[in-house]
Image (cartoon, rainbow, N blue to C red; front, side, top):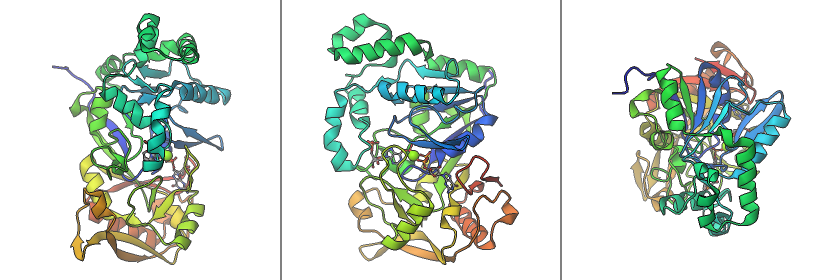
Amino acid sequence: MAGKINKMNSALIGLQWGDEGKGKLVDNLAGSFDAVCRYQGGANAGHTVIYKGEKLSLHLIPSGIFHQNKLSIIGNGVVIDIVQLIKEIEELKQRGIKINDNLKISKRSHLILPSYFEEEKEMKDKIGTTARAIGPAYSNKILRKGIRMGDINSPDYLSKFNLPPEYLKTLESFRRNYGHMITDTVELLRKMLKDNKKIIFEGAQGVLLDIDFGTYPYVTSSNPTPGGILTGSGIPPNTISTIIGVTKAYTTRVGRGPFPTRMEKETEELIRNTGDEFGATTGRPRNCGWLDLVALKFSSWISGVTEIALTKIDALDKLPEVKIATAYEIDGEKQEYFPSEVWKLEKANPIYKSFPGWNNTKSVKEYNNLPEEAKAYMKFIEDFLEVNIRYISTGRERGDLIRV
Ligand code: GDP
Ligand code: IMO
Ligand code: MG
C-alpha cells in the first residue's frame, strides 16, 4: 500500500543498562544516513560525543547533530523537558553547531511539566532515577493527562491546564524562537522513506532498562527495545533491516537494582578510572562488572540484533585476567536463561569463564593490530551470541573505531 519506500534503515540499541557508547557510535555512523531519529526516553539519556576535542553530552538532541547536513529528528515517543532542550540548543549553538531547519521535533511528543518534578522525588531514592521526571512524564501520558509539543501553538488549549505563568512564558519563548522545528514527524519520515532516504534510529538507555523486558522495577519508563521505534516514531514495521546492538566489553550500571556480575571493589575502581565511568547526565559513579552473556543473549534476542558494536575494549587493557559470565547459579541450580524476576536475579551467582588479559588495544584502528588475546575474547562473544561483531570501539575519539 505504501508503494516503493526505502526499507534499508538501521537502529542502534543499547544492550545493557545504558551508557554502552551509543552517542559515539551514532556520531560515527550518521555520515552514512540522511537522518538520525530518537524515539524514546528523555533527558535521562546522556550520550557523549567528542567534538573538536571537547567532551559534549547530548540529552535530547540526536547524536548525529555534528553532521551539519543531516537531519536530527525527535520522535513522538520522546518526553521533552523544554528548559533542558533550550539549554542544549543554546549550548550547541555557542560552539558553532548549526541548529535550525536540521532539527525537527514531533508534534506528538509529550512535555515534562514542572509539577512532574515533585512527583519524581519518591522514585529518585526508590529506583535511583536520574531525577529527570521521566516516570511521571510517561505515566501522565498513559493517564491521558499530558500536554504535547503541538499543543503549545494554542494558548487557548494551554489555558485549560493551570500551568505556572513562568512556564507558560518559557513555552511561548520556545514557540517564538524554535516553533518552526515542531512538525508532524510521521509525515516527515514517510516522505523521507518515499524519497529513498536512509534513517538511523538512536536508542536511549538499554534493553535491561526497558519497562517490559528490563529488570523491573529497576528500569526506566519507556521501551528502548525496537518495539519502541514503531510506537515512538510511526514508521512501518518492515522498514528496518539492520539492528546494531551496542555493548561494552564489560558491564556498567547506575542507579539501583540487581547487578550479578559486579566486580570486587579493587577491580571496579580500576575499571571506573580507566573507563571514565561517571554518569554523563548526573555525574554519579557507575558500578562496573564483568561482561554478562546470560543478559546479552536475552537482550540481543529481544532486539533482533543483526550485528554487534563492542565498545571500550581498551578499558580492559592491562588486566592479567578478564572474565565473562556464561550462566548463573540460583538456589543451587544452574540457569542459562536470564530470569524475569528481580528477586531471582538478586540471588544469581555468575558462573565465569576466564580469559588471559591483553595489553594494548587503545586507539587501535585495524583489526589485525589487535592483540590475539582480545581477538579470542571477542570470538567467544560472537560464538555465544551467534551474532558477528561489526564494530570495535577502542577509545572515545571518533576515529577510534574498527569496522570488521
Ligand atoms: P551512551 O549513553 O550509550 O551514549 O554512553 P555514554 O556517553 O553515557 O557513556 C560512554 C562513555 O564512554 C563516554 O564517556 C564515551 O566518551 C566513552 N567511550 C565510548 N566509546 C569508548 C571506547 O571505545 N573507549 C573508551 N575508553 N571510551 C569510550
Ligand atoms: P543513556 O541513554 C544509564 C537509569 C537510572 C535509573 C533508571 C531509571 O545515557 O544510556 P529514569 O531517570 O530513567 O527514571 O531512571 O534508569 N538510567 C540510565 N542509566 N544510562 C541512561 O541513559 C539511563 N537513563 C536512565 O540511573 O537506574
Ligand atoms: Mg549515557
